Length: 377
Image 1 (cartoon, rainbow, N blue to C red):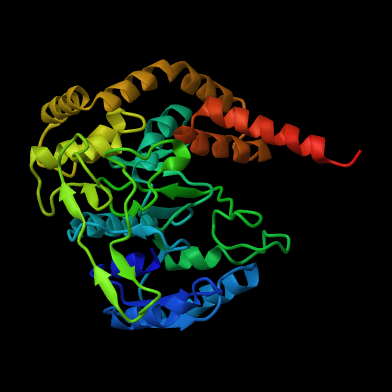
Image 2: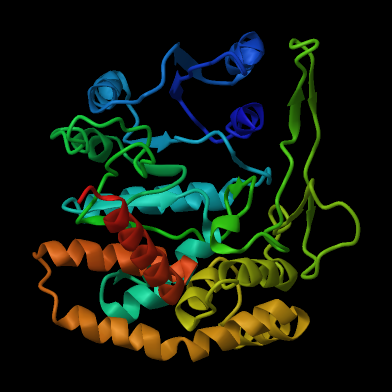
């Protein structure tokens, strides 16, 4: 997975990179191959032989960026996200737009999520009804309190994250931190891309979405413990088929055709972006990547709904869940923007948007009851 992720960084216009890699007894055999792979990437790289696992190390890593001329950085804290399409036009459009939005709104932290595509679009209608998002010149921005997965953000904004230690001395291995306290942003916003940029190899099983068009994928780069200097690379096969093709799909990706702006590619963008929670707001933003009007966008949305039964079922579920979303919006009216409760409210909105609000409430309640029972009397 690490090798596949590294290979997929080629061609993105990266100027330089710092890699923090730590190997244990189960992975040390691959060290020489991965270091050699990094040397073949078309940008200057530095490799540090340890993992960023404390606030002090993250702060030091942010200071290492002082000599970087670019105003944006790409942050990967996991090794299992790959870019599958050679077309980088949407990536360039999104990063340029992100830079423009950051300049115009310097008090916010603007970020581009490179993965978790359906989750970011599912949050667009939720952020609108609850008033937690923004729309700037037609561009939807959703709240991002705990950034997860690979992201692009401003260099200065990244450096500012590490001014004050929020970890209470606990380990931190990523912004969404499984080892201790996570980063909590009161002013963070995601810019959802209009097309899928990277794919999580294990797909989105954590929100019960891991079937077509978000099937799990095999890494497309293989290295071998018996002969670690050997490497084989397979290409992902891209298809615009709305229904899952027969047979093994571990190297088949539901994707827009590279450089294609046809209605067929538009259908695929609609299917993937609206898969969790179809909405007019998401549809309008996605369709702006294509040279068609509102009538065509609605027509293609209906075509996808007819062609993909699960998509239609999710659209129906979204309508049935509307009273819950409205109740959350009403609840937000009574929570002061500056209160501590607001942080928990936004967290519940963003995580429940994909997991499901009833499911998240039950999981949180179960966890609290278990913690109380395990506490000493």
